Image 1 (cartoon, rainbow, N blue to C red):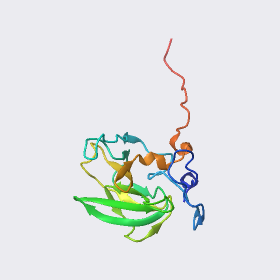
Image 2: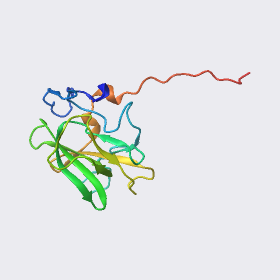
Image 3: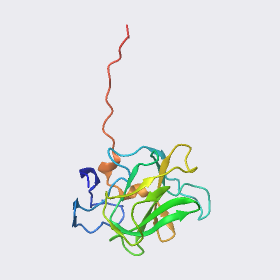
Image 4: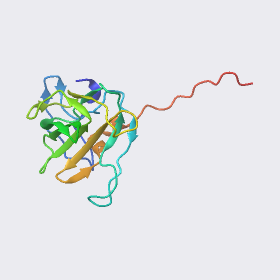
Length: 174
């Protein structure tokens, strides 16, 4: 697991903290589903006003087909297979209360099977093509029971920040 992947404290207002422990590749915690320095969000979280209303029940991350997908947090694979013709992977997250949090990834080709235990940052799938996005993407979702949540709440603030912008010299100016 790369250093960018580990994290164990969600801070105030975040989901319940995961149990801190050390896995075979280092501390377990939370990670971006796509590798460093953090993916480009092509469509953000837009919660629906009603249970069946319009909205976007997750976020879409730019990812060409074949991009490795990492587990955002430790847990066990509760589903790995097709849904409506797309590959879907769902992880029930360890230590997140009752009912537990579940995170989902699609469209993917799973590299793990139902029942497997995974750690944050572990490669669990690769992206595939789908008509979900105009360009290729990974749809990342989060739920507690029947309630959809913003998956970005799983990540610590330091993983959500981008480095500062840099001003570059302008050439050809009089």
